[in-house]
Image (cartoon, rainbow, N blue to C red):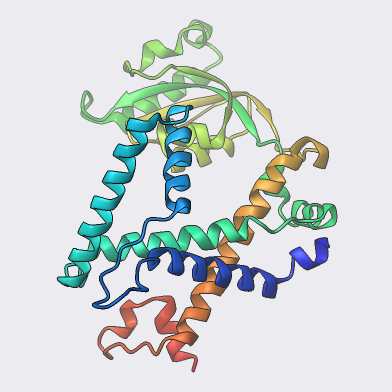
Length: 296
């Protein structure tokens, strides 16, 4: 049964069934009597209105509330029919995006029906160890030199670095912040992940700090704020975590990847279904569509 649920063909059949059902629901009033203008409200419509109300208000609607829901539903249906008859849905960017979004949601929901086996999850875990490991961490102190407050912050930073490294100046090691400028951020950080450091100072600064050996002062290192002298006091290298510790995370990432793959397959099937034509000058701008057309 699990193997059957994992078959891509089954997923496409389910997507087709969902789309057919959605199309039937969308056009449920299209079957009409003379003149093609019949609008029918069924018990299923009323049930859907009640369920939507219950989800929002955590209770069933009373008779007057239900009457109001049905009246608004009928009014909306009539206005929507009139808008389509007047052609107001044509060349409307908001309508097009909303329809595309609804199909995208249905494909995503169908993709979530896939149930991975334990072996699938373990293979995914083994193939992407960097996603599930314990990240490297670093503790460091920095001294900041402002570009705005100094004529030559680089020269000042280098001069301060020489003093901090001078073994004859032990007093300066106790209060290194006195050599630099004030910054709203802390001067000392403990057990920081690289992504967190990048969020504070920028990716380039974070990469440089994580490459420093612990113990001594280094710099100047540039950030979005200015220049910094940095001393790493402790480092914890990245290390793997056991599968059992991260199984829920592995499942979530597996589903995300499966969803992306199913989206790409569905889009590829649409490219085959429809005869897509673009001007030669436009083709380089179409991205994956241009690549597909070029490969034919």
